[in-house]
Amino acid sequence: MLEHTSPGFELKTYLALQRQIVNTALDEHLKSLPLELTMREPVVYALSTGGKRLRPILCLAACTAVGVEPEIALPAACALEMIHTYSLIHDDLPALDDDDLRRGKPTCHVQFDEATAILTGDALLNMAFEVLSEAGCKSGPDNASRWLRVVAIISNASGCLGMIEGQARDLSFEGVKLNQEALENMHRLKTGALIRAAVHVGAVLGGASDDQIDRLKRYADNIGLAFQVIDDILNIQGDPSVLGKAVGTDASRQKNTYPALLGLEPSRAYADQLIGDALRALDIFDNKADPLRAIAQYIVDRKR
Image (cartoon, rainbow, N blue to C red; front, side):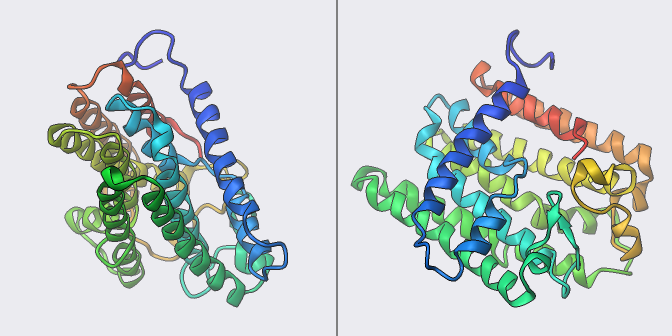
């Protein structure tokens, strides 16, 4: 157990409970889709194939950290998972990374076809903003401005100022050797932007102060980059049966990675450094931030 967390906090139990809460909420959204809807089957397939649910859990944990019950942030958590899932579907397409496995199951374009996969990603992206706008409409005039801010944060993080730009750089830089600064800028967009948004919107919906939000964004920036460093390491050393996807693909595509630039052991040391910086950013919070502290350590210890 992390020395930074209170005695008795059990991350495994916490993550399992939060995943169940998120999955139940996602199931409710899926049940609202008419059975005769052509896109229902691929959307359900994509969203129900498991996954860590890290981004929605971070959103809920950030809300808890500022002292508010996390249920208020559940619509945002679901929207974040929908956007993340859409991004994976498109990332796996033949025109991008051309992967056959995702979360241990055939990727969407393999299970169905390429056109269906593209439309499924489009559907999930739009569904996310349906969920967010509906939550804002139901929140009442006092909280509507917070939900509008949440929409702005998430759309910024998932669009051409965030994740999309990062994905575009990742593709355009294949075979081009980057320095560490350029590599980090790319990954802060591709992977880090949505992780940062998850923590940010959880804090906003919890009514966090400006200082709390600044600290939480600093935490998120560090764990987002550490997450990518570990992803790069797992692509070399990971077990495909545990990861649920192929390994060795980064090298075959001549992608820029931390192990390629720094080496394996220096990359792991860098991830540890980032997690240390993330934990220090949480110094102003009490034990309500223990889930965030434990998740930071989980990111560098994970096998998938």
